[in-house]
Image 1 (tube, rainbow, N blue to C red):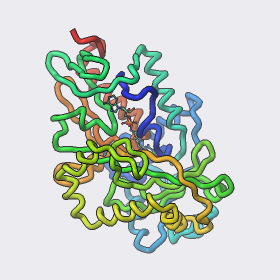
Image 2 (image 1 turned 60 degrees about the vertical axis):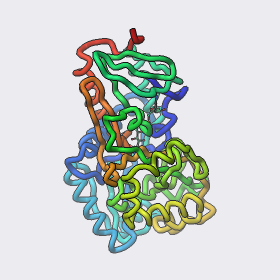
Image 3 (image 1 turned 90 degrees about the vertical axis):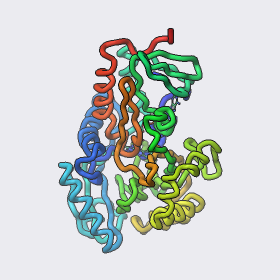
Image 4 (image 1 turned 90 degrees about the horizontal axis):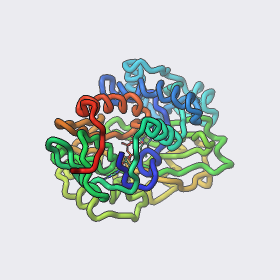
Length: 375
Ligand SMILES: Cc1cc2nc3c(=O)[nH]c(=O)nc-3n(C[C@H](O)[C@H](O)[C@H](O)COP(=O)(O)OP(=O)(O)OC[C@H]3O[C@@H](n4cnc5c(N)ncnc54)[C@H](O)[C@@H]3O)c2cc1C
């Protein structure tokens, strides 16, 4: 296993909401729905087995306007289609589930949970290492050539492998090269605020706004983490670098990659996308704008209850023809497998999805050892 950072979980897997999603919001029949529903149950069991902190408090999605009730009904239909527990609750029931939340109607998904995502990554690594996997940290993959074996060009020299599995998250399209020439990762920053210690009592578990189903983002939510902190977010701000975690941070190569992508302009022509960008710029610059949105869900929230917190960038795939790809994409060649668009709820999907990928690699490996020095 080759990892460019010196430690695990430095990007998406360590910078996220830490929610085990039940799959109430995913389109039935999609890969995400398939892996999330199974993954949610298995992940909760795995965490219990391995002593990883989990808090199974459920998720409440709150409709604040009459128009949002239609989306709640669609989410309820999706939950039923996926065989996931959910129930529509009245405005009065909302307060019984979350004392400080207010809305005209809600959807309660009791299987939603919080977990310690970095501890989960460490446990998976320990499992892999116990099976003999070696991790080469500080080694960046630059590309590969496929022939009788796969020659992987890295910052630490060339490695030869009978098969290659590319799970490079925010950089997966670059490693995939020609295999994913019609797709580009455009990073969207999910920036979070969090509640001050005194105001954490305002949220028991998870309170979500009704999402705009045009985009693969879940909208603002207030989530109690396993460490007791309550995070507010994540936003969905166009990031000026794949690993640019602050507004003013920029990576020229990444930014020109976004601006030179025809799909980006096609997407930008859509008025809903343009208004998303405008509202996200406002929220990333002003905590007051985040507060005004969160206050719709929890009216007792004061501006002073919010402070800035961390950010994580999503590896969102935009196609050449301007669509934000909603589902997981896996591309294969004879000896390589490439995972693209493993965005939320990728952590929840990870056990069955990882098993599927391992099966694909196993077929390509044909029993050979994974990595050896070229030549
Ligand atoms: C803001 C946010 C909130 C989210 N919330 C949730 C949630 O609540 N629940 C949920 O289930 N999912 C959530 N997700 C989604 C989830 O975090 C991701 O789907 C998942 O972590 C993706 O894992 P990954 O291994 O594909 O990518 P990553 O975790 O990004 O890992 C990719 C790894 O590849 C390495 N790498 C990259 N390029 C190279 C290279 N060239 N050479 C060597 N190594 C390289 C990176 O250093 C990194 O370690 C969220 C994501 C974000 C961004």
